Picture 1 (cartoon, helix red, strand yellow):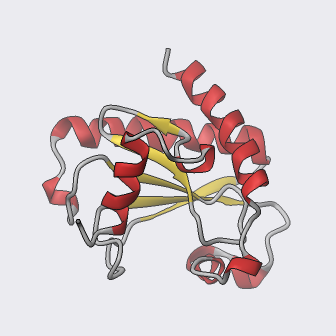
Picture 2 (tube, rainbow, N blue to C red):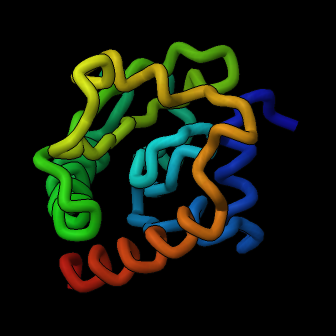
Length: 153
């Protein structure tokens, strides 16, 4: 069994066992999911569908699809969360998640000053009781899936 948590979650999606929040949209190269350990509703993650650990390992097709998805996910978040814009971050440094993935985070109009830019990261890696509820994440996931399917037709 792989020790990469991103790969383990990918297997769950491949088997059809993932909840809606962990299976928002799947392209040929990327999976869009809601972050599982955040208090921020709409904190999304684009995860490479194959295990790569650095951006230079992406194929041209993966990079092209990523660019389009970042734009489309940002449009969908603006529509559904009424955010001003989105932040995009990529590190792939966590012990469990060395797998390339991009955080796409809504920047809300009323966002506290201490949560602007990189400081928003304090809303990730939270204990279970501080995280978004699964029902909220699932509801948003279903709406975002409809938006993305519509955009990509």
